[in-house]
Image 1 (tube, helix red, strand yellow):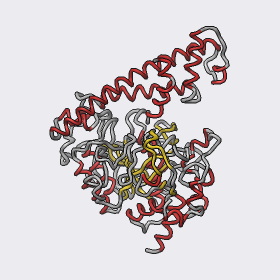
Image 2 (image 1 turned 60 degrees about the vertical axis):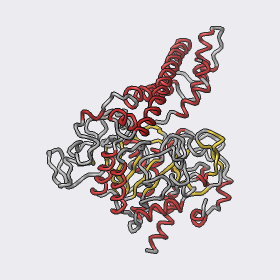
Image 3 (image 1 turned 90 degrees about the vertical axis):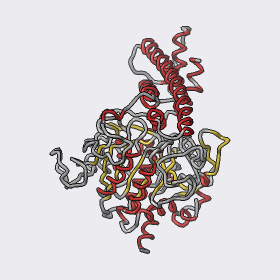
Image 4 (image 1 turned 180 degrees about the vertical axis):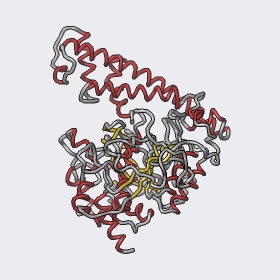
Length: 542
């Protein structure tokens, strides 16, 4: 969940009340100059259109989708592809979701719940993947763990302390502000319901209220601001509660130096050889552990079943690997999760996680090298801090450079930034990290509608949502053009994207505006239609 945009609206409103490159031009039928002349959509997308905007075509729909519907109708059609296993290294996943249950990977060599490692892969009862978190869920951020355990040299620990102390103060202030806003909105909601004599009401009904009662009119003003956030006040209150939970988690767990979420697992997370931990159940543990379910749906939710959403890829099996807690992941868990995915048949790995400190990054680098040697593509979200990842002050892990800007050590790692549905200067999400060297390509990531635990569906935003879009396109390529290697697939993704010379605003700061072509290695946004055409050409030349 991304709270940056939500907060900016509150601060500007309610707080005051309280207080193309060559590859694309050869493939797409429209020249780059015509793409750059596309006018932003004037009419706002309907709720139903918003649910599928990421699959739209830029030229036909004037929103920067991946041309997926066009790819299915004009290229894939009735073609039969091969099954591709996509590993989702993430939080726990709802394996029983109505829109996922038929695409969840099944380890046919393992017998469920017999307490044995039937296939001798080193993991017991791993029917749908593996759970490297055991029964843990809440966690510290890595740089807070490093302070608790005194890991790192004095300079690193000093930097970590400054970062933690600043973040703790900000989280405390944000929590207090959200509490104030929630109290204000809740009371205004009560006042309006009482005045109108009804439980549900519309914005029009609220704004039509005229009264000399200052308390009532203050409530009208408050809710008038809130209707800019969501269509109904219950939705606003839900958003506020989620924000409050977010900042509470930061204070209680992520930034709490004394908290130890790993204690109940029983292993030493800083010993790579201590591997007898976790279990074979990668199901989400609580309803709020929704991230992995949402990511899985973007990649491969059952298509054309008249339920929920359509995933990007057909012919996929989703392997669930629970390794990302509510906090920062451990390097050990990620390294072992990558190796598990590779050893059990995954051809694409989606990694919608990341952090700024990685005390055992060499374990992850070795696992990434192993994946590359086994021809597995690794797709990673670039991160949600609005930072230039080419700046040495902004390290981000995992990555494909052992020393910043020193060159990639593998050619099968794809870093993905996030797009919004607003083509033009604001099409790069304000929260999305960027970098000519350290981000490869962009994909739809804001307001993405997908699966949630308990047969639910919702919108979420982040590079966490952009990464599985690219992973899904990669799975399509590997399904229909299986002769292409992981590095071939990366090349296809980057060469076939749509270019644009549009000047885009970064980090919600107009002074950081740059040409879209200059903020990633490819300078492009992923395009499924073009990717399949280029993959076909490349495959025929092998």
